[in-house]
Image 1 (cartoon, one colour):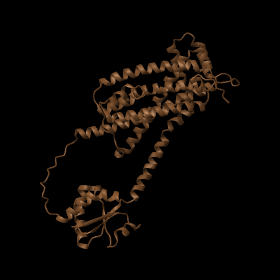
Image 2 (cartoon, rainbow, N blue to C red; image 1 turned 180 degrees about the vertical axis):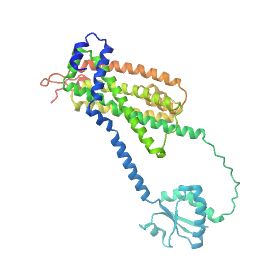
Image 3 (tube, one colour; image 1 turned 135 degrees about the vertical axis):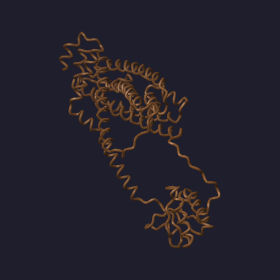
Image 4 (cartoon, rainbow, N blue to C red; image 1 turned 60 degrees about the vertical axis):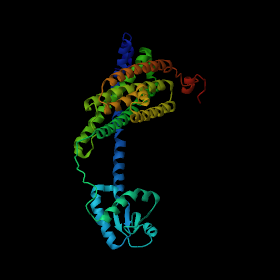
Length: 414
């Protein structure tokens, strides 16, 4: 529907009907634009960079050898130590450093040999060993090297301690809690990235229409509150389309890669409910932040002012995310309850709670509270939008900057 048709046919529409007209207009205008394709491709670039960086980092780690323990003992003691190392290594794995024989010399000089990758030197004898190396390295290897020497001294004799019967189980409470915590943290990060990535679209769309005077045509036919609500929900619908596309691409990549991609542990409420909660909490968080961004966009007249005013909101949202992440480590305390009650951190805190706690009724209360908060902030944002969006003035007139309009001081823009 064009702007002319909006002006012609919306005189008898209710406020919500007019908002839906604006929502459909913006939704289809963005969805069928060329820039939307680049918007969908945008998140792929950091993913590709991350995959390449991870591959390069893994290659570098593989090429850089782990520090080894140089053994500067007599031949017999070195053989006994090697046999002890072979017996212990399957049980201790990476906790036990690799060993290599070093010709007798000054241990400090041997540690400076660039042809070797020695972290410390074991000299003296098995009964009176001396471990030479940096303070951090010898403190780290003191325990494993002590066990290795004890094993070499008894030369594989049966241990004095009783044998321990090992009975493996499929899982444990601690294992489940730890695995669910991984899912909770991953869900929080994904929710935050999606909200911050997608909420900024409302700003660019509003500033563009203010610049080409489309917003004035809309304001002449439709209440500004309807324009505000229409743009907000149109951007939410566009964001949902983007998320569906990204999930589809991610699912195709996962199916193509087989079992090579690790799978997150199942959340406490199960995957269907967890995904449903993710959609709801994303919508709540997006509407809250989007209403703030739209109010900021109504104050600003240029892209520079938009960037200046939106930066504090973005930084505060980052602080809110960190606070909600910290609340995971303070379950049951006032920190968690404050994170749940504070509207901007509530979606992150409750989404993480869905991963670690199977109880459902707190989510119903939280969603009701977040819906009330969304209604309040959308109402306030709509009023600011109506008050400031048309006060840009002509190009040659004196204007008040966004900061001066916000704080009530008259300043002249140059």
